[in-house]
Length: 66
Image (cartoon, rainbow, N blue to C red; front, side, top):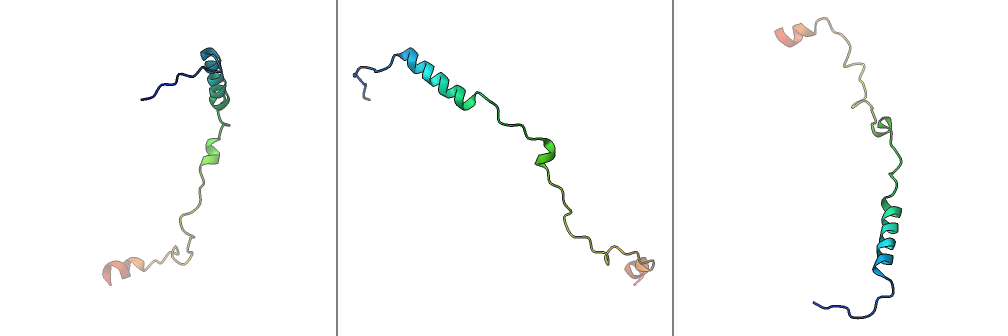
């Protein structure tokens, strides 16, 4: 483990003030707010098929009796 023995160019209080200023610049403000409406996208999972959703009155006969 090595230790530095050279003289410092800035004082410890100046280094602390610089570190404080850097923290304030980086974390001093919150990011812009995002509305919940902007975080969700809704769209149908599949394209509706009109032929599939037509009513067939005899469908139950084919399904259960055929």
